[in-house]
Image (tube, helix red, strand yellow):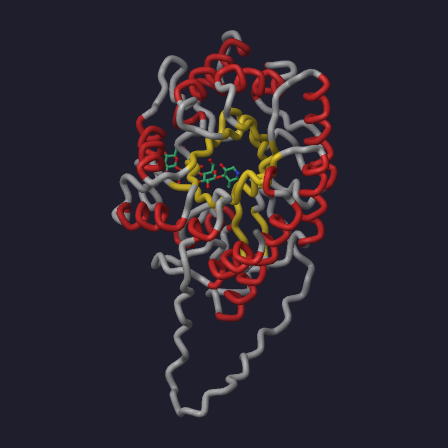
Length: 365
Ligand code: G3I
């Protein structure tokens, strides 16, 4: 999970926007017009994805159990061409006991995606977080356990899942290898994980996924050093997932461009895998004002434009936002401050952020 990044930048007083043009005496505030235009998935052949809740343990966001499940399914299928499970394909939920796999929720998401002609990205096979207790306390043969875990899951979905986050967040921001149950018990676990995933599915794109690699060169150094090592040993890996849990100020599009460029130079596919753009990192706002919404439109436009102008079409793994509406985002509870980081508001309405993505998609082939 991304660390709380404190910003020293001063937040300029937000002046009242001068009302220009209207000569009427209309006293009611202009209600912003609803962004209109074709669905995002109709604007590009690039996979435009969204993270979705599915399980009963995520009742607000679940496309299966939420009281708003039908609206969630409709919006997701209308606007997006790719899905990823926000949680149900993590070890904690899909492999709750050593001899027991829970397919039901993942299979529901796969069926939903297939019924709506959507790609499916698998998240995630190996992570230090969202682990079932039996795994954390395991005392058997760790390499056999890893092999069973990856082989069983990837084989189960080999006819439906197009790409996987094989390993998620294996490095710390300083570039050192994160200490985890995997690093502690399995020498060379990263290479073994990708080898096992490839053996289970010869066709799926295999990604390494992480946060802050778009802005911390030492962290990206470590990731690309791993890729270089893999290539000397014929260990398969196809791409890098940049989570992109960013905010209105950080990182700069130039930093993002430099990071993408390093992957492109190595012939790696690049996914924006978990995009959300927090607009209240300094906790100075209590609502998404029109000024903040406009700034968010520009930021979404600039980030997507940077991706499309830096990553050639054949290396674009797609763009996924990490949640359907602002009301379902993980950021307010994680950072403990209000925020509105996604493309749709709590009423399933397109925001100016949606327009920003649309503008970028339509401007860049
Ligand atoms: O509500 C249930 C509770 O009933 C149950 O007892 C408990 C068991 O662990 O789970 C609870 O669900 C919570 C779940 O979200 C659904 O809301 C979990 O506590 C909570 O840890 C989980 O947080 C998820 C987090 O990853 C950790 O897995 C977030 O939804 C999810 O958005 C977040 O996503 C991660 C990516 O996978 C990796 N990159 C960073 C990103 C943001 O942290």
